[in-house]
Every structure is written in structure tokens, then in C-alpha cells.
Length: 305
Image (cartoon, one colour):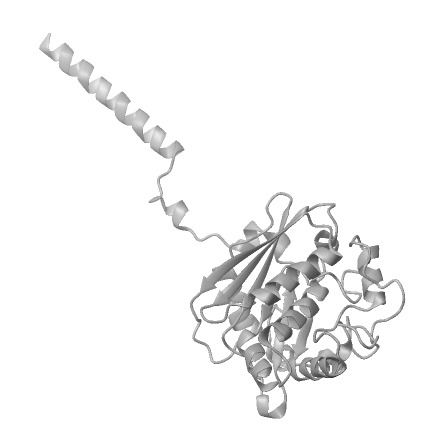
């Protein structure tokens, strides 16, 4: 009798342990090796890591996405002004059909770099810090406000970069340089330079000019790809390092990432100060040709003249 009880208990214990192991295998714990393997956002969200301008129609229309969620990733001490953020949302509402435009602020520590290179620094920082991606009917955008200038900038020589676009949903604003130039200008505030930079670079994400949004009429500058030849216009070529010239960020970045546009700080500030001297708004607007292009690619029709 005693042997039978022992045998029964032994069999019960074996079955119990086997079932426990099976349940454990079906529901791995956080300590399993598989959960420790880092997941690459470029593999998880490939639609957010494509060429600049390839999401132009998605940004402008509501065919695939009804909403925009924009991550404002900024280094501590370099958060953009609220005035610029308000005007930026107004710009997006004017030219897109998005029902909701949400800004998510993400404060980040400094990478402690003297300057930033597109492939060595800017791209990896996005992989490390970005949290907003496409989700259902919401299109995710990432904008990084940096505490360091672009590699190769030379303020004394007039070579400074304010911003750059390098993917379909990614751009960088060199906020330290923005503040430096605004401080040097007699008639401009930080928000003036911020909003002009944001709107110009976002214009490229919306496909201007011939960068995912085809031009209805020929107005692309012959000497500067993807820029407008109409004066004055937010997208005109003179704002990109004298038109045909290349910025330090473009010439020094060797690798998979390439900037479709880098905004020349000196050229932009010069134009903005001229606008103010004429009694006009500091930041330039999109001309009628660029507005027509956006409308034709699914954007909101221009009702402001």
C-alpha cells in the first residue's frame, strides 16, 4: 500500500513539472534571452524610414492618415518657443487636411558633441530616442532640436546650417545656431527664425519642389534641385546655401543618409530682415505655385490668397 502511494505521488509530480514547463514555454518571462534582443525601429517601422518626400501625399491628404503626431525631441535648454510651435501648427492646418495635429515634447540629455554629422550622430540619435511612429490612421513625424551646430559650420565665414531633412518623416533643427543668429539680428526673435526654418524644411517633407509633389507649372530652380525659382517664396533656392552651393552637412556626410536640403542660416536671416524692413512678416510664405502643387497632391486648397 505504501509503495502504491509513493508511486502515485511520483507520477503526479512528474506530470505537474511537465505541465509547468510547457506553460512556461508558452508564456516566456522577461528574463528569456529572446526578450533581451534589441528591436531595430527601422525594421519595426519601415514606413518611417524612407526617402524624403515619399510621404508627401500621406502628409497632405486623409487618404491613408487622418492625423499627425509630431515628436518634438529637444535637448534640455533648447526647447523651441511656444510661439513658433503655434505658428507651425497653423501652417500645417492651412495646407493639410489632418483632423488632429498633436505635438509630443520629448526632453533629452545632451549628446555632448561639439558638432553633429548626419550619419555618425543625427541618424543614430533618432534610432536611440525616437518614440513616435505611424500608428493606424496617425502619421508619425520626428523633429530633433539640437544643442550643437552642424559639422563643418563656420560662423565667421558665413557658413551655418539651420535645419535639414533626411528621411520622409525626419528632420533636424540646429536650435543652438538658430538662437545665435536670432541674437545677432536686430529685428528678429528666436521664434521668427524657428518658424521659417520649420516651415521650409517641412515644405520638403510635403514634397516641394518635385520631391514627391510634382510641380503643376515649371518653377523648380534650374541650379538647385527641389527649390522654387519664384521670389519671394519660402522654398526659393537662395535659402539653400546660395542655390547651387552645398552645405557642410551635405559635403561632409558620407554614408547611407543624405540631406535633401540644408537651410542656409545667413541667407534666410538676410531675407527675413529685408521683409521686416518693408513692413512685412519676417518669415516668408509659400508662393502661389508651391501652394498649387500641394493642393494638386491632396493638400487643402488655398483660401487665403
